[in-house]
Image (tube, each protein chain N blue to C red):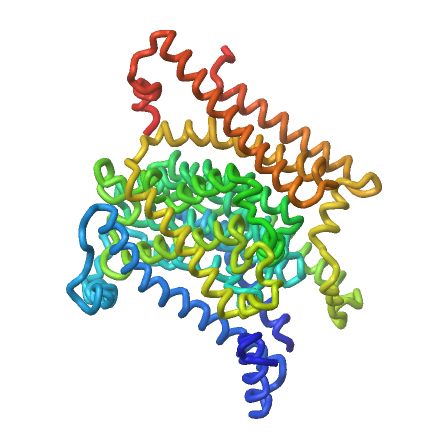
Length: 410
Length: 170
């Protein structure tokens, strides 16, 4: 066993030898090693989170033609630590009439639901928490715990704005979970597997982003909605409900919501990489050539994975800082009348084509999948165009359809 | 006592105590959240029994959908979310006696079975339980008929919901 080729098992084997050498039972040693492993994974994720605060602030500054933090440390790199110190020494206020236990449980659940996701995130073929055979469903399950954290936090604050924010978030998440679940089945069908390792390895020749570009777009949109980031950040719309569900939280409790959101966005960047961009692999067969065999090194794979995840995170930030917030009735109509039917069409198309084209050589299969996606997008755009034209012809005013229902929609 | 047994006992204690809290707590939201805790405990039980798919589906369906809808409905319908009335009726002792009798009977029945000394067989790694479940659901000698009947029922419920929500039913 070599540290460079299989670091986790190497360290685990060494520690097992050490612990059993001290006279511990083998079962107890396993429990202790797993516990240490979980702690190390959480510390890694949280340390990354601190860097993400800096990344987010620098990137948003660039999008808004500013410089961003640049006072403390080189390129403002020590800024996040200053932020954390500030958050920790702030006064911790619990509003009167708040439900104490649930009020404190909210931020904990918010960050826990993200850390749960790291259990299945494959950093490389040898560095991962656990390779579940239902990893795709696990992703959805962890998301539902995130919803719970927002309900709990919003309700326990005993604040009308917080409760409104929680309502909106639940409506948002319950609806956008449906296209997400449907679209998660596309990599499952293409890879014949629900495990993230299986999906990654199935993309060693061709990324699923090319086989199913529409699936990628729908997943990205529903992921942003699930994250509650702009343009779907109705739960914390400053202009309407001040700050939404986290309005009453101060200091590090607010910090946990904030850190959870950043890490969640990065984690979804990672899942976009895993499901559609080949994860830690996907070098189009390059790694099989002798000269490039170093691409199989777990540390190189982890670097590749983190780079791809960072790219996904950057796209999510790009959308967040360039799009205005949409209205809630538009958001729900967009999901139920457009995104969900489109996701179902793409899913059925993928399922049928994967059987029909299964006998073809690889390039024919890939080309057929890609062209079918292009065809669906063209038809979708044509339907939308015809719909818009009909609306203009029948003399509908330029006011959006939802305006007259706005009172009920809130 | 193995680690499995410790986890099982902790988990069973969690399920029973949260189930008790569901029926005794006075705040409706707390009851719904204790229900979430109980359902989460059941998901852990499934995970211990190597039924990963069932564990995840338990969380997705019961916590992600049903419990959250409960909480949502409770929050929307009642302003004062505190139950003030008496928590028991005058004839509370009858169900209590019945419950204790059923519990004693079950314990005797279970103690008579030689199941406590057995350990569950480990599922070999190469067996894909998820694939087996999937083929069993759609194969003719499996469960294709109940599966399809359930699908048709759900579809009918979906169509009905759309019809009611469309508002054309005077």
